[in-house]
Picture 1 (tube, one colour):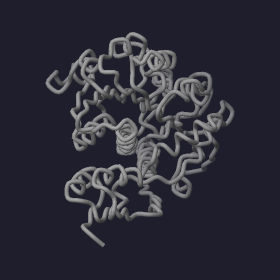
Picture 2: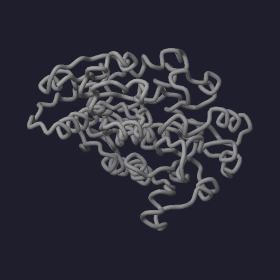
Picture 3: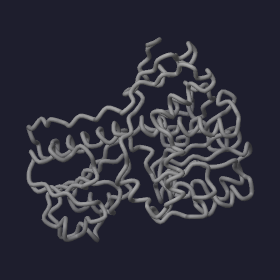
Length: 372
């Protein structure tokens, strides 16, 4: 079997080789010629896989180490016998970590309590469901909007988009990018959307860039329709809108789901998809995720009201990445391809937290010890 894999997908090298002949290339170097004689591709979202690159190739399966698939022309693949698989839910905990860290930053910067706020989650799949649980643990009121799920499951858990616009202090998007059909999400956040929000909410997009319109976001900020924005996903990546970049509170290079734990899970799921498709009997030895450099978080001497944010930001601080991107937006792709080790909560142990904060941190997934 001949496999071409994105060189920037971690935890593949040394594992994938047992299945056949493997070549690694950066995702932006996947071309019609480089994939022509390959049986399988393991990819990210850097290259679009449609007729222009797949026609005449030997490719039988595309395994994407991502939750989304808007970089794959699924209609073409289905019509031409090219199997495609993604890794749904692989980075849900990582995105939740990103959202939680960002919410805590906004609360500190603008001096409010999250327990007084309502958040609307638009798109309640693997990621949105994790965000829901975390926001409830933070003491927030949570409203859910997901028309496809509401239609199939009933309306008891969900509210319509008008209610989200009317009642929410935060609106966070976690939908796929769909450009047509009943559940179209392209430019869901458009001029009309922002004109109809009532509580001047913060907007968060850690889904796909096209879910919110650059032009509409800029207009909404300029006209004070919204309080601010957190953007991890951008239209026209990596050529992001420089004016919008300077206007948002937090700007990151599409890395919300880039924890080492999420990447490892995506890699494992991609390999499992490969094994299943080719009916292989191999049981690979997966590589281990490195431990964080500072796995103990000591909250002794830290004011109780600062302990939660201190612990979460110890695991992940979005402001550091926001500063770097605003300084060097031309390095958008480089930041993604050279992302440092980031671990999720379960890789850390908390000591010397107060009783009330200890319970919240435990519920988020930290290991808790009373005292060292």
